[in-house]
Length: 295
Image (cartoon, rainbow, N blue to C red; front, side, top):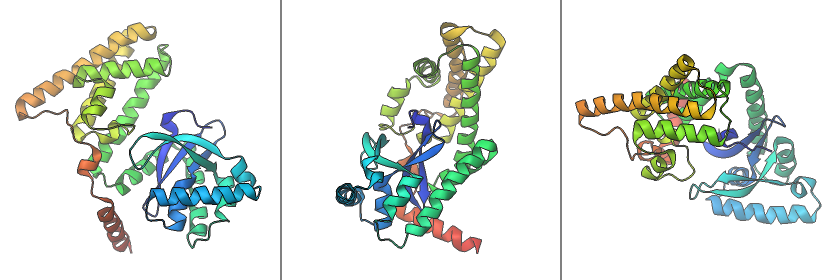
């Protein structure tokens, strides 16, 4: 089962969100069953889809359906309030059997989509560039600008270089990574990661997915500077790497202050993605326009 928040991902089927989680150990995706019921039954909202699944689940249990008796649960972000709750998930093969019990004209297209999601993941593991192409497409569908997406993908690369460097210097993954990240973030922005999220009104959502382009740029400068200093000073372990993290964050802080002095505006913003992105109904129209233009 997935056990790393980085393995959770929102996938899109015909513009509708499906919460998923990748298991490195099992090399397969887990999909939110309620999200799939929402799509296949074309329910009006999340609660209606949840009630449909509860009734279907009870019937399948009574029938002895193994896909339900072996059902897994993961803590996924709720589309209602952004908090994490345990919800039923299933693998691709398990879902094939569950979908057979849901009368829907979308059943076959959805099965094909799941198979493509699995295939794409394996391709991306062989060619990391495909992973970035997919990320670009996913962010674009969600309504982010190309300028923002390009900056976001650069921050992903910078973050990978940073964690690779921490691994090289003996920093332990998990709490030590989180603490060093907090040090860097606090140095350049004046806030810890958790305080920054509260500043933007976030709960469990990704902070970086809710940063402005300039916030992303400065965060990347802080992390890239930390990598360069670490490679030059060659720290050993967490304590020495913490000193380096302070230095890297300070470089970005100095840059932030100079920009703010010139513009008269604060770079650290309370804006989040939902304040900037078009609403869902407009997104649907934009996607339809894009499809028309492709023909």
